[in-house]
Length: 198
Length: 138
Image 1 (cartoon, rainbow over the protein chains, first blue to last red):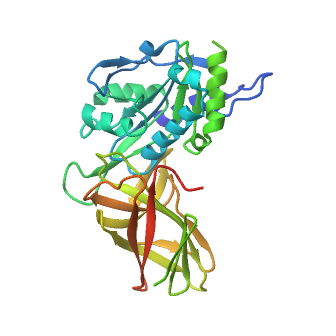
Image 2: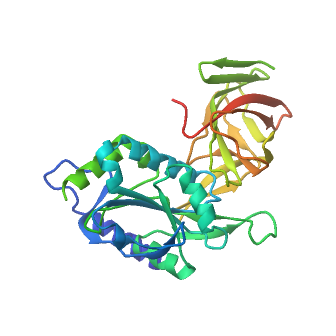
């Protein structure tokens, strides 16, 4: 019921997007929404909050390093999106991967995971309660699915696969489906437009 | 067993009914425990074909998996077989069905080519050479 209410709220938040300008490629929140300032730990063990990236675009997604399909593809798409940006703009965007797997992921495993795609990407992790607040704030959801063995570490995580774009003012402006992320040029075009609107 | 490699396109015949196009294995980070293989299966026969598993030198287990979408969440599930309909296709792609390479003995390196053997429910086995890539071949 709660999830249904969140979904309905999310859908309503999107109603009315558009305006006179050409629509964004991503799905737009209109009006934009103040983004939840999550408080996590980055892959170097340092505190990470969304607020620290004010002035930049932040693009992030939730996932886990044992994820063999969606998460590698998402980060590969992030890498292609970064490459599709004008060179001068690349440092004005922070790509971020937030682990949903505090039981198995470690700062080191996250560092290796995101570093494989781009040395500038950041990963972050938090407690179960931190993650619950962050995912709820972005209408994301996840759950563990037990594997075939009795090993308590044998599980996968089902999760929503959207990527989120936070504008330089710290407002949640756009989000993308997993499928949309494969169009790096279109997503980079949105980012360029958001950066130019600062 | 015949393997043709034409400008990055690998095609292999198994009992002359199964054609495999554009196979690739996802290059994953050095600490990955699993990766996925994607390709398009083309069934030239008049009966369905079922891919039930396989083997690969770098993996302890090779299993067919499907992507699930439930309550807005994406997940994966091992299935007994991936079905290729008669005279039809099954497209395996990121975010969709795939062949899962689990219990990696070593992580495949981007740019290398691996032999992947796929087993059909008929008992037929086919071995193809699959490039390891970060993203789908164009």
